[in-house]
Image 1: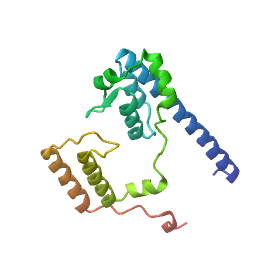
Image 2: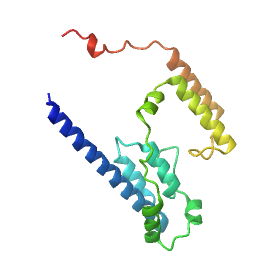
Image 3: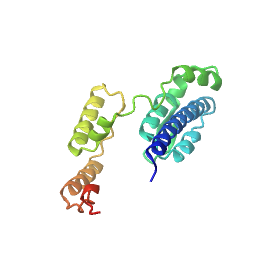
Image 4: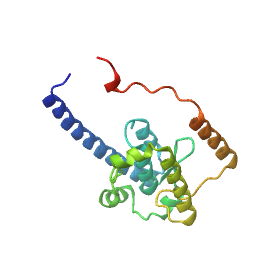
Length: 182
């Protein structure tokens, strides 16, 4: 077992490594976006995400949608957003890169708080937030989603799975550490 000092040192080091990793990912995202703008090639996003286990991929994918001239398809691949690329008016990829460096908000800014994380584990709260997100999208107020795909057959399958998950017996939880006899 680590001593308190070793554990604290390791936590500090971990924090520095995590900050460096986020900055490295931001640099890659900006350069991949500039490359997508200039060449129409979004493969760097896929390669990045394939190697980005342990990061908030949802937040990073939102950044790609907002700034990277790409959209995430149902099968988990990135596709060039020709409309966004056509509307952008940069001289070249370097000009795009320079603009993104100055103006694109970092993908990791405004991460969820620990309170938000705790809420996300609440089934009723998650269903309520889904309903709210759909309602906001339909009214045009959504800052996260641009459209809602409604496939009644797929929704019915998902609802059946949800019902099954909520009503099926659960395996007994592992005993808490304070319940284990020493």
